[in-house]
Length: 261
Length: 261
Image (cartoon, rainbow over all chains, first blue to last red; front, side):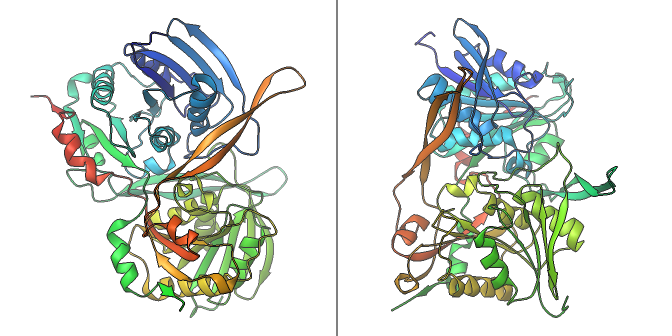
């Protein structure tokens, strides 16, 4: 490891061999020493899950000057914890997660393992960024992302992030020439409307596949969904303080509080 | 089902047979028709995970007038989705989750399956509350919780909650006579500092158990940790808009944005 260079921990939720993390690893290596710890299988939709019922294992995949790569049998959040506490035995200068195959804009941030990994680093006061490309395919084209990923990593390495804030970056799946730039946004409203695909197994028992369609809310011009629909890369600063501060006063005033004398 | 009474969906993350959900079911039945859908095994630390790689199954456990109880093989968030879309085929008037065995105050809200279930209902615009008792034990004493759980459920059924807000309620594990009342609070800072318990299996391979100790941040008087330490029931309004609104302006001003001409 070159001690003059920053140490960057790379993870994802699509699994260690997904093209998205391969791209992110190669970009991260242009900035510093890179440690990769990522799930050995796809972990989409795992959100901030941690593994407490099973033991965790690490497997070394590759190693080179200033670079080491491990897979683990845990979640994206476990990967960040293992990377910091077992592999590095200290804090990296930056955690980057992704590049996710599929959007983590709007409410997707809540379900996302990619963003949970970034949020976990943020809880541990390490600057962190989650990157996603709006293409679910394993064969997604990542050729146009370098410029934007590099510019945002460079900004965070140079300027840092406030304690308790990380970045959620989404990149449109369009040709490089069509991308209009980078926009700082807020999380758009939106939700998944589920439809369970109901089936009967060979033993005559019901089972259900979770499916759903994404329903946009009203996407204001300063929201991530608007930016992405207009071919901008969206950057949303994300926090893990979930308090609905704007409602604290009203909730107090309506008499839900009590105090015994 | 009595159509004049509210319909309440009950779930948890400790599993369908945990004493905490048994207590919450019995309280919910005093308010209306109750549908229970909860994981068939303990799902602590599952956060907002959803099941997309495996089929989901429901099993009817019990049924009575105005009451039906199912277990499922999914997560707490899956349970809410199944309850709404497969069992009820419509929205309940209220979702209650818990009573969790253990605290979901401070940053625990991010890892919690109990709170993820409440947040999932909130995303779907259903009023919802997650309840937790500060005692991890299966033999935890829930005898003092009725008064507070009833008062908060009553408040939410009567007054509703704003769209996009649910409640995180934590109850001290002390004798009823020691509880001082109910306080509306914000989420205190704090984090888990992990220590992996490193072991070697009979085949000479390393493995790791995730353990950790909770490290309090500075708990202000208006925070949940302060309230709980002072024997108040804490009520934190929670939102799933993760945007760090207070940092949007600074992030724009430092030049991370770009626009191609």
